[in-house]
Length: 304
Image 1 (cartoon, rainbow, N blue to C red):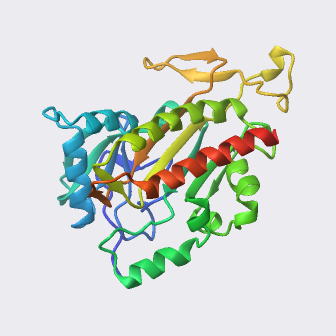
Image 2: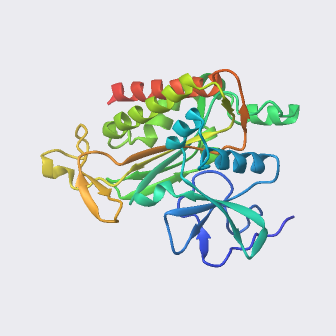
């Protein structure tokens, strides 16, 4: 049995983390950290080689000031900003990735970690690893993606619900659209069509990039989707919370002030790069998941 990792001074466990290793009571692996002085930055411990080294080197390559690769420069738009490597004196042997905290600009964040692709193991995986991955969520071979964690805010009850990987894996294929994708976008109380439409536009840009790049293959990589779950006083517009696309959302500007906006605050980023490999062809594994995610979202729009 390992011991609980030391929490470096001036940090706390990441406020909103729906998947991955968590830092806390009873946990033996290093989790995501957040600076108590700057909520806009998070710190992700670099995993043991080769996975951690691979992810660190990938971030360094993409965000290097000397990078001239057109595909990587375009890819950077879809990743959290990388601000280098950081060491805490309490854990001097552990490097941390210093990354943009995507969730920090949201008041009531709805968050989904979506692992992309029907194949979630890389070409170096052992038979045991392959068997382990396949049994986690067998339906992924047809769905093309899987939720590994969700946080959903219901503004009608002012209640936030967190759903872990075990709940996500329990979803049956025939209920995945309604009870999985639909639940995340508020189908059971107020379908957020505005958010879905804004997200589809962003996903199309990512698909366009994957349709043209033949340099990299992404295994077990995720999309982090975040949208503002707080809906303010929709009745001011003569609609109810169950009305069509009736959202007067609270939006946070870069200076920290808040403004009301009829446009939803939505973000999506590619994360988790411990299994990125060189390639010479399109990443059809990731594309299959991305196309299916877009298809599910369009089907969900038809239900509302």
